[in-house]
Image (tube, rainbow, N blue to C red; front, side):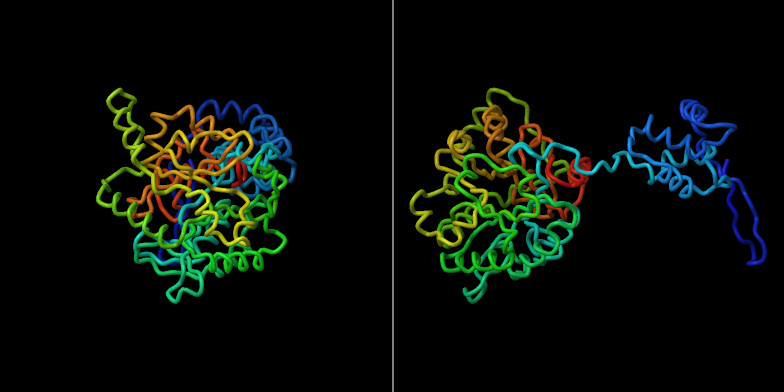
Length: 425
């Protein structure tokens, strides 16, 4: 039982007993093992932290801090009630603060990466403001991949960041870049990847190249030819900014494709739980339907070979540290592994859920060397998210989420990266 007081008529205090949960028998036995005469001393608490909690580096000072944080009458130790309070309090989190304890010397494709989607949006996908504030908040949380959709401004002489084809208000690209530079390594020293969805003409691409180069300077990762044969490791990329995009088409072609995709998917939205739809069971008739759908989808959202390369400003091309591609030919071509080249492939949540049914093994084989990014479908207007486990089960490194969103899926995403201190895993 715990005692509490309250004031009566501003003159005197009355004390009453507050019923609390009694420690179970296993907690009592554990307490008796590390205590003497009903008190667990500093030395006893330190032994408990090392032997039971597996906090090998726990010191007497750490034990003293715990004692000081639990209010009770014994300054040299804790009684059973205080010990029970500590075990279930915020000071004893379920995940210990181990810092970065994973091996970070493997190629980047071997890790799951904390990834944002439309990182500049403050709210929903249709009418919210675009700002650098959500980017700052994401970086402070530890997000390592920031997505920027770049478009010509209203006068066609500068570059804005906005969600194209919607009522979102733009923000200047240079403002976003400066904020990324300032906050990129607040939560972690491991690299920040900027994925660019490019809707620019070649002259504006050259302007973006100048902005990026001047803003990031020496911390901008300049890839060599070997980087396109195997990705470098996160350890070698500490405090570096990496640009990832694909050689873009002409601005008008890209806009036309985007409009067609948005038109085809609007109207398909349905009420979903926070998890989103699960992958359907594998049945013969479903497989045939999925395969037909996949053959029809994404035919326009592919590389155009030489045409794509000719439209690319040379200064802009040299910035690309992780090359993104989506060749023609559907899923079989997308997931084909090139032994001499690594790449990044992007796929919508909806298409990915269908792909795991018909091409599950190819996806796993692809992600061994290459990077796969899955992003929320365009009908998630409210910035909700899907079940990330489907992607992680198939080796998807960049499960892109609306970090400004809400729901259990996002909580799971945050918890996933807490274990390795909010960095790639």
